[in-house]
Length: 60
Image (tube, rainbow, N blue to C red; front, side, top):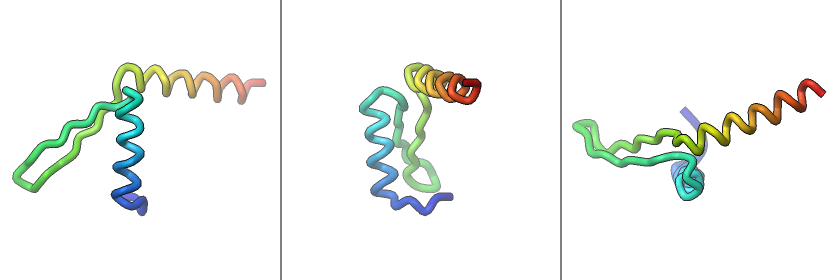
């Protein structure tokens, strides 16, 4: 899916989690361990804010 090394991906996910932008759950499944990541309300607000800034920039 991506050529980003797993260690780099884990680091970036950890930064987002520490900032409260995503929630991470690790679960064991029949297929093996899985990591589930969901965006938080704070993360959604941050994304919307970034999109607003880009729209404003595009319209100026």
